[in-house]
Image (cartoon, rainbow, N blue to C red):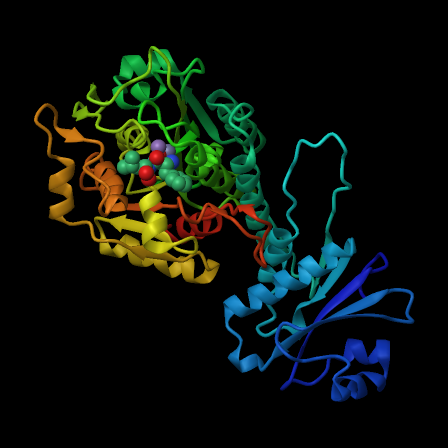
Amino acid sequence: MQTNQSVDVLVVGISGNQPLDERLQALYGDKLEEWVRQGDISTKRGELRLLPTLSGDVARVLFVGLGKVDQLSQDDLRRLLGKAAQHVKARRLEHVTVDATTFPGQPVELIAETFTLATYEVKHYKTSPSKAYTLQLTVLPEEEEAVRRGTVLAEATNLARRLVTMPGNLLTAPALADEARFIAERHGHDLRIIDKEEMEALGMGALLAVNQGSVIPPKLIVLEYKGSAEAPIAVVGKGVTFDTGGYSIKPKDGIVGMKGDMGGAAAVLGLFEALGQLKPDVHVIGVIPATDNMISGDAFKPDDVITSMAGKTIEVLNTDAEGRLVLADAVTYVKEYQPKAIIDLATLTGGVLVALGTEITGALTNDASIYERFEQVTKETNEMIWQMPYVDAFIKQVRRSEVADLNNSPGRMGHMIFGGAFVGEFVGDTPWLHLDIAGTSEQNQASEIGPKGATGVMVRSLYRFVEQEK
Ligand code: BES
Ligand code: MN
Ligand code: ZN
């Protein structure tokens, strides 16, 4: 072995229609072929066999059954690698070497990414500590750049997961601003935190209305990564640190979990973590409108009419449709940077869950080309998106009000589209992509690439998208 320390486990793929790796020959001699023939080591897709060795350098080998490699999709491969990673983690094997040459396409980056994603552990606040698992991954051949890219993108995703999991009392708007500061300082990003007084001066009446019932001040977090002199790509993420629904209060079962209503913000921070590490030649502005949505004697109410930073007045029909309000002012703010494209991401509607479930992010766009470019990238990351119609019939209903320019909740039928269409009112002609991640930001069961809970969805896709937009 070409590694400097002894290996707890060597992970290899084994298939029905590919010759055996020579490295294994050295460990098991002729026995291996016999075991495979007898079925003691299965080449069936998804079957795992962990066997000890007699060698001092490599304590064990994990054989990962690939099935027929010509029928293995990128997604199948990701799942197999994730399953293998979780298998070694469950056995607390930390010094892991994966032989990429035994997997189709020698997917060094995918191996690093998937192992880092799949072995992520959810942070908890239990007083009895559990011993953390620390993966020490080597991928052969040692292609440093590919390993680094995969690891960084997965770690940035894990950062987003960690933020989404944090409870609303600990991850408040000011705390979210501190997280942004931490990332900005580490990587030298420009950071601007707009506080309540400045919001008032700027006329951010929509964001301020959502914050009105809270004792915790709002923050508009603005991050800039300037890796090129071109016009920036703007990425806006909803940062509602807890959504009670306001006076249109959520039922007791619907309110649990609303600490995760900053999944869009988490994706933006994950993106800036990756940008800071990988430093591509692109220009990106990230904006996070951060606040909780609370009730009190000061809170905004249904029937209130508020004035957004763009000057458009809004009739509030539902205080629980708060995400589109905070996004409206954030989008208006970022327009001043004259971005060449705007992507907004938000855990915006329960409607997207009804329409598309938990595996697909709902999308809306005013520009077929940006949609296609983004969709292409999601095919590599396996973060599926699906376009919903952005059409006049819906736009008209967002504009229907007897007392204001817009209303924030035209009704429940097709309301994922209303949420996006409302944001669209503030975008103007800039190519724009709206991503409703309410269904995909968290999962209620574990998958091959991560535990139950926050997924960090869209960090990897956003990075790859901005990187190819230079
Ligand atoms: N944060 C919620 C959306 C949500 C629901 C996220 C479930 C994650 C899981 C959002 O602010 C909201 O309350 N949306 C309302 C909109 C409605 C009032 C038009 C909804 O989906 O019911
Ligand atoms: Mn809400
Ligand atoms: Zn919300």
